[in-house]
Image (cartoon, rainbow, N blue to C red; front, top):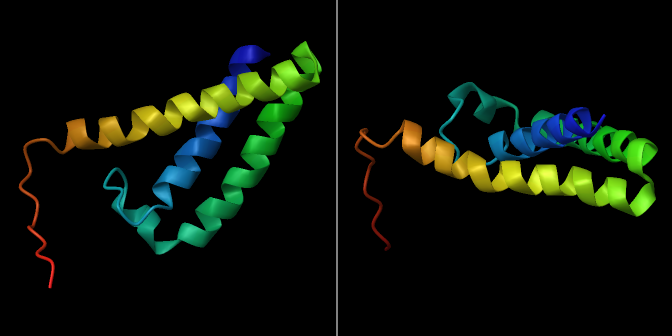
Length: 94
């Protein structure tokens, strides 16, 4: 059950990350950022509920949120690594 809760928490984090305007992992996700933000909520709540059922309240909440935090740290690095050879446009402050 722990791995299932961590997977759900990572899915919630992925939805939140894909809703960001700065992500480049999945360009089609930029069309529906509000849907992705709302979809992250039931994934996160289910992850906490599953982990809390398996390990108890606070421990389950921390297990689920640690899974989400690990995904939120890893996703930008994955994004940068996948796009390391593509030139980016330069933005100049005005």
